[in-house]
Length: 451
Image (spheres, rainbow, N blue to C red):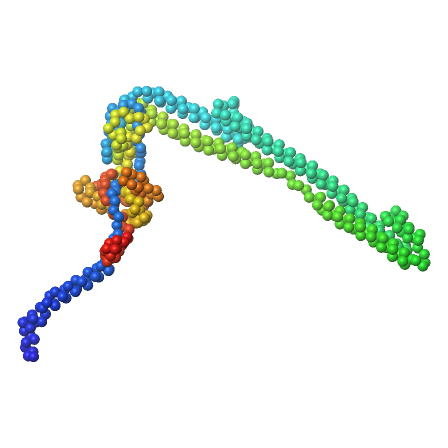
């Protein structure tokens, strides 16, 4: 072939701009790309549910403090209030009587505290500090304590007296056994002297125990029968010595056993201290409860005094109002009924929680710590997305008309921009990421209807 043909444009056009280069090779490259993407790229597995933004904590529950009619109501949803700001004004009726009742209750509680302090002082000193019997029964409580202490002392004294009697009897028994042991030792020594006198022919003191044996032997002894007779009498003496030694061994065992002395009870001081500590602990617990009650009544009295003078409810903290929908349009609300709640100001306290409810069929797919995305729309109709992790999952389901649902909470800290834009109660979509799969596995499981 002429090499000049290889340099022509027509040759290259025919060689490289054919069906293979225009269709097959790009299609093959595309197929490789799709296969690589299907086996290498991963798709997130998610569960989504509706959710709303709620405060991490409630600052104050604003409750109705009067049964009177509300003449001014400044409670509004998502309204920012400052500490001391007037929220509600009541029409005053009968507040003076309520204030008098609280004052009387507070006076009684303080009197009770004073009597309880006298009981504590009496327990610590061991003598009554009460000038007279009190109406709360604390003076009688101290008398009961003294009676218990006296009973413990009497029981211990009686126990020690019994032990002393038993120890005295044991001492007497031991002394008697000691005398018997000494007498037995003396008899053994006498019989050994008799044995020695028979063996050697020496003389023997007539006062010696067993002398009658020696005397009988001396009367019967002759030259022809001396050895045989001596053996008989020595055997008799040895028998007596053996009996005495056996008896002596028993006496010594009895003597060793009878010498044990029982220890006197010395637990009375510790028992009295324990009794005292128990009573002081009980007084301390009652004092703590009483002081708490006094603080509560004093707080209620101060609030009631403020209501009596001004007939109004003030904001106790800076925050944002969330109304109770059941009472927001009522002008006559029973005392103690919840009017609203005071939430933290998002700009100052940017910690919130996102609450959602998940159906029971999906709850097994999620766990604490799973990553989540919350998407909502702000006041300017602009979509916002927040990311965090699941903080808690209820262990039991909440029954609703649509079935059983589990409550989950997600704690999150907002940026200053987010805190200024978002509001409590905003609803959105919470997407929980439960895992990842390649696209191939994902569509394969979809096709095979596998979870």
